Length: 118
Image (cartoon, rainbow, N blue to C red):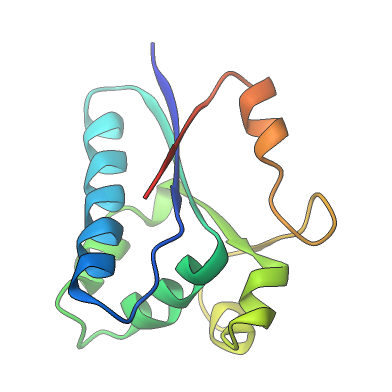
């Protein structure tokens, strides 16, 4: 059974970034629906998507809601660096700070996840 860790790094400032975030969430949903193990991590500028997609008025808010059970979390350091820490803390997305304030990709790989970045 595949294990996929989908890491969203795309920024919120372009339609291309929106496409990458939506593709990551949709891919995670596909893995889950097939019975595979999948999780989502928001990292780098991708932490800004937590605030964007948490807005009920956003066209892809429901996609985030549909995949909330797969969200491992958002990088604590990057959430602060990109000015969205408060919004992340107000969302159901936990902050990850396993390695120097960041999520541990090493842990994911050690746990058998294939890391796919968007």
